Length: 401
Image (cartoon, rainbow, N blue to C red; front, side, top):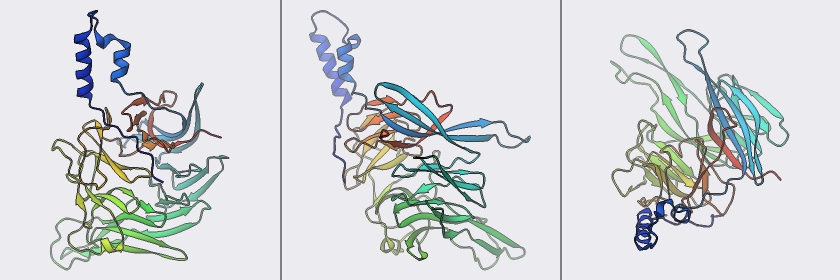
């Protein structure tokens, strides 16, 4: 069900011009900038902030051994905000050294990683189920139907359902090769996946080996972006792309991609692409490494599209950059240069943000505790001072019944 659209653009220059005209026509010579009514008229109303927020906090401690990296400990908290009462804070879990944590889309389960284990916590009664793991990792991704968690238990990609049953999707691979004289081993790895729907995931299979190898036949598996299709009672079907590309955001079959092999805060992609249907047929096209897609025209060259996401329910993309959020047209071709909301971190849609559970609003909260309404352009502060070292929002849930 698509959300009701309330998106209105605000031309701040026009608002400032209007205030200036009013100032010139005033008879008492007062400064309109100091007038409460003028100030209120120039600022959009703040969004409503209420509900249950599941958040993550982190604390860095000194390294136990000289020369080692400092240790970071994580905790998960519930932060309740309701009408007529101050916020209530409850610690839910302390995942210790691992930082992977996620809340299921239906708001019923919290999954988090600890040292060599994955923990599933029922948020209604606090009961926990512990799944042993060979490794410690921070990969925790819930399926859209809240039935499974994608994680890495044994050096690959595994799915754990809410009953604790484990399904192996893929395993990291080891390749052996020679440089003409010596024999070597190239260890592979599988990246944390993105869900397209309840039965399909996209991830990368990577192999680490030197960029130049002397001598003879190369037997190293090529890096690739892979689509995994889950099948009841059978092993998942794995479909490889011609090469490796980056899935930036997904909303069902509609995805935003980048041709770059990596994407980070220090190296954002130069060009973003929209693909309306990512399926096996699209991956079968071998013209280049990435499935055929349309490039997004940012509309002005100085925009750095640092992070991008889809508005839930509509599959309409929005981009954060230049300390603002911009809308992309329904065809995914061009960015509207008039911002929906201002003073937003470039990393707003990278990690640690959540959308409001209300169906009639396009409001989201970012990892720095700010709440933004894309419909009005208003903003507010979540007020997480009671949570030490607050660092990310895992979920925004409705008020408890």
